[in-house]
Each structure stands twice: as C-alpha cells, then as structure tokens.
Image 1 (cartoon, rainbow, N blue to C red):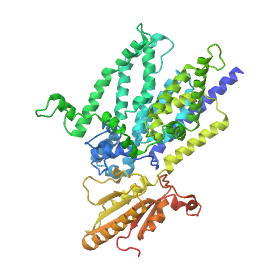
Image 2 (cartoon, helix red, strand yellow; image 1 turned 135 degrees about the vertical axis):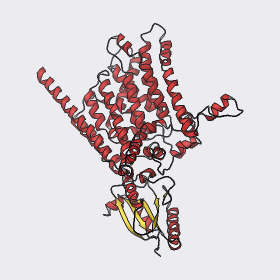
Image 3 (cartoon, rainbow, N blue to C red; image 1 turned 45 degrees about the horizontal axis):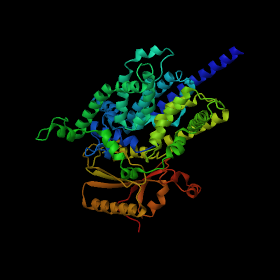
Image 4 (spheres, rainbow, N blue to C red; image 1 turned 180 degrees about the horizontal axis):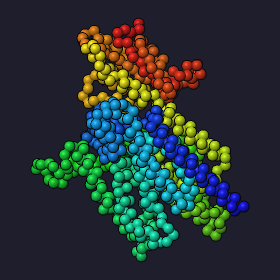
Amino acid sequence: MVCSQEHLHTGGAMQEKMLWGALSILRVIWCLAPQKGYLHPDEFFQSPEVIAGDILDLEINRPWEFHSAFPCRTVLIPLMTSGTAFWIINFLQRLGFEMAFNYSYLLLVLPRLIITLLSFLLDYTVHQVAPVWACNPWKALVLLAMSPVTLVFYTRTFGNAVEGVLFALLLLLIKPGNSNPESNSTNSKDHHFIGLVLTVGFFNRPTFLCFALAPLIYWAAQRGSRGSCASHTMLILTLMKTVPSVVLLSGLFVLADTIYYTGHWPLSVTGRESFIKQLMKNTILTPINFLHYNMNPENLAQHGVHPRITHIAVNGFMLFGLCHLFAVSSAFKMLRTLIWSKCNPDKSHYERPPQQASLLLMFYFVPLMSLSFFKHQEPRFLIPLIVPLVLLVSNYNSAMKTKCVIVLFNVTGALFFGCLHQAGLIPSLIHIQQTVQPKFTSSNMSCHHTVLFTHTYMPPLYLLNLKKGQTSVDIIDLAGCNKDLMCQKLRGLQEELSLRNTQVLGRKYHLRAVFPGSITTVIKSCGLSYKDEVLFTPHLSMEDPPKMCDLLSGNLESHLSLHVIEVDVGTTMG
C-alpha cells in the first residue's frame, strides 16, 4: 500500500513537471505569436515607446513621466529591457538587414521577449523556495505557469512585471536556510544583494517598498535573533548592512537620470551659486518626483480614483480568481485563531496555522493592504503577488470541480486579456505602417497620410517605424471625445485635405480614421463617404462596449472589430 501511494505521488509529480514544461513553452510561443491584446498604455509608454526614440531615432509620443521638466521615471530600467531589444535591432540594421528594422513585428516582440525571459526567474524562485516554505514545488509551478497573470502580464513591457521579478528575487534572497542555525553564515554577503534589489526596485517603482517591507523585516529578524544584543537593536543593525550597496547603486541611478534628463553631469556647472545649491538644482531624483506627484490628490484624480477596498474586493479576484479567495479565507481563519487564542489562552479550539503559511500570508497581504492606502488602484499593481500566492495555494487539496473552475478562469482570463481586449489596435498599426511607408513608383507623386484614432487606447507611434522629423504622416489621437467634437474634427480634416489636393501639385493627401465597431453608427452620422474599410477582429473596448441589442442583431463581427476606413477627401455626403 505504501509503495502504491509512493508510485502515485511520483506519477503525479511527473505529470506536473510535464505540464509546467508545456505551459512554459506556451508562454514563449504566445509571446512570439504575438499576443494582440492591448492591456494598458503603460505597457508601451513607460518603456519601448520612449527608448525607441532614443536608440532607433523613431517618431514617438513621449509620455509626461519622461519629460525633462519633471521626470518621474528612471531611464535605466527601460534601457536594460527594451533598450537591449532595440540595440539588437540597431545592430542588425547596421549589418544590412533592413527588414529587421522595417518590420514592426520585431519592434513589438523583442522587448516583450526580454520580459518573458526574465519572468522565468519567478519559476526559479518558486522551485527554490517551495521546499523551504513546506510547499508543493511542482504544483506551485503549474499554478504559476497557467495563470493569465504569467501568460499575459509577465510577457509585456510593464514596470510592474519588472517589479514582480525583483520581488521574487527578494523572496529568494531572504529564504531561511537549513535547520542548522549556522547555515546562514555562508550567506553573509546576502545583504549586499538585498540592497541592490531594494535600490533597483525603488527606482523602478517606489511602490516596491510596499512589497519589500514584510520580507525585509522577516530577514532582519532572522539574522538578529542569533545575536546577543537586544532584538530591536540587531534588527536595525542588520538592516543597516544594506546601506552601502543602496547608496552606491542609488548614486549610479541618480547620475544616469541626471545625464539623461539634463544633458550634463550634476557637477559640471559653473556660476556663483554655492556647491550645494548647484547640486540640488541639477540633480534628478525620479523616485522623489514620482512620490511628490502621486501624493497630490488632484493628480491621482486625473488617472482615476477608486475605493480603498478595490484591490482586495475586485482586483485580486480579477487577476487570481479562486486563488485570491483561498488566500482571503486563510487570512480570516488565521485572524480568528489569533483572536480566539488571545481571549481563551487555556483552550485550543482552533488549530494554529503553520508558521510558513502565516509568513506567506504576510508576504501577500502586507503589500496588498499597503497599496490599498492609495486611491488609484489598478489590477496590474498586484501582479508581483503571484509568487507568494501560488506557494500558499499549492498546499490546498482541491476537489476536481475546484480545479476545473481554476482552469476555466485561467483560460478565460488569458484569452480575454491576451486576445480580445483592445486587440485590434496593434494589428491596425502594423497595417497602417505598411500602408504609409513610402513606396517607390514611376510617378513623381508623393503622399501625405493623416491617421485619426478615436475611442481606442493611445497608439504607440514607434510601431509605425517613422523616422524623427518626417512630415509625410500625421497622427491624431482624439481619445474618448464626444460625438459632436469627433464629427467636427473629421469634417474639418476632410475639407482641409480636399482643398490641399486641389491646390498642391505633386502631392496626394489621404485621411484614415480608426475606431471600434461599437461607435460605427456615430461615425456614419458624421456624413462622411469612404472608399476603403478594413476590419481587425476581435476587438473589445471596455470603455465603449457594444450594446447587447447590437450583438444580437446579427452583425457580430462589425461590433467586435476595430475599423480602419479611408475617408474620401474629395466628396462628402450631403
């Protein structure tokens, strides 16, 4: 009987290994496919959109966080991720591989591939720390690999994905050693690596301190408990060991950001001002600017203000499904046990949870509750929590129905975020890039293209592969403007370009409009005539979702597509 159980356990572990391997291959293939879903503008505008302009000299729309007047983002992290991909493309271009530079596919996929490869550090961390935390390593790895958070968010160029990788590395560095108390003596250099991770995480996103707080205190307490001094003193002394590496690497970040945003070294200035004033005036501290901006309620209101329970009541379920429910249930059970033991110290009605589970709950809920103090709460802010969550859930013996619900949730989430949400925009940009690129013809006629986007996410211009300073393409983003303004702008452009076509010899002007199918009737009411229409299916805009009656009317493809029309700039419909 014992042999039979061991055989079943070995067979189950082998199946989990094979499933993890298949899901890992899927992660890479789906990155290369590529995924068409567009999760949030920040996946482009906090990394590849900016760096493509710097390295490849492409036309871009520089976001406000990277303006030199008040920079809120370090440039080093995007340079190390998207920059690596664009340096490869630049190198291929110098070798004469022109297609490598002109093809938007590489501009889209290579930066994503860098993040995807980094995401396997999560898998490595789970595999290494699971036995230490008394968790099932291969079950945790399967939960990690099949999650839509891993398959979609960790294959995109989000700063949150980098934050999640750094959080995983921190959990790896602070894992307890073997049962022998002296085993940690061989890791006396860990505080330097922890300091490096803390610094990179803080400059990447200052919110990293919310994630690092509980692991850092646990690590310092473990080290301090072996000393002879008072525990609080040892705790502080242990944390102070990270200071040299923090200071050293912070200086590197500050120097790089200062040179990037000001164009000169912090100390390469002259004048009658004192040394300290010159230093303060010319030094760029992007994390401080980030915190200063986000502490202003008026600034947060521009990006959306949410109830403080949004993370725990909505975003956690949206990202993690039943796994988040298991964590919340475990947290309530632990609190109930603690309260009962305080009120009834002589009774043991409730069994105390294992110490490992309690610590994993802290690693999950301390960041979640800390981030809940900020009123701007988006689901992607929680994606670093997937590592402690899968470790915590891996010990649950779920029924078959529960497993089916988890699988169904993961498949649905991956398809929605990866294949449906705003999924027509990126293919439309690649189509437009092929359309507006100059073509060599026998005639001397040149073309000018005006492309208007409305009711879509902000289009990343670098995917159009247009050189800086070009004058042949104008991009207009109307965002979610109202019907009257949209029609007024379209009619005005049609009349203006029609007039230019009659007055300017040797140049042909074109006008294209890009919009979701849910506002097709609004576009038609503008009274425009168009001679070409291309649909990119599927495309679902949650900001302008199609009405149920429209979906049931029979024209499903039109309402679940992104439309690209070429407006006839010579005529208008009466």
